[in-house]
Length: 168
Image 1: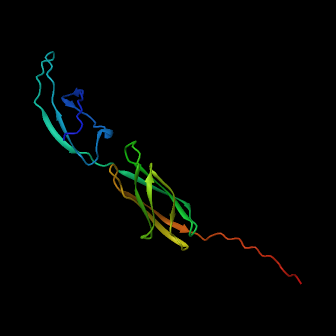
Image 2 (image 1 turned 90 degrees about the vertical axis):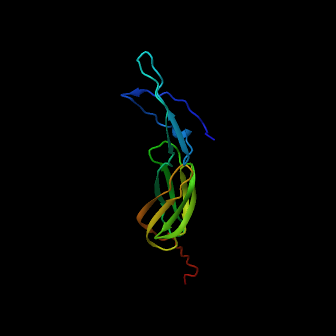
Image 3 (image 1 turned 135 degrees about the vertical axis):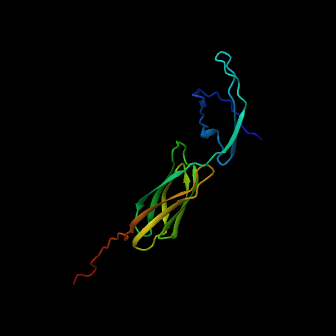
């Protein structure tokens, strides 16, 4: 199965023709076969060239992972995670993220249209943490991770009300 075939004319300058294969035509991880030749131009006196073949694998795209702490309160610790494609306008549609605090898994979520919002983390003790977010990748985008150091989990604010019942 050769898949889709595209017939593209490429301008030639100084004997070189360049073509950028559009990502939307590509299946990541697939092998693409390319055949090219120069068409005869009798006016300029150029003979047709023999066909030349090559192939390449369509590589997955790289990502950037960003982390924002929404709420650093113990037992209500939440974060927003954004995963964007590097050097592309394509949206990172999906993929798993796992969050670690000082090396211990404290949360997980699924990226939807580049984001996972208000992800609850199982952080139950006050203290300083290094958070690591690992994006697992998908069919189009590579996995990647990010770190946030010196993130402090804080106490839960409480209100104490005193009612005097007997004032004698």
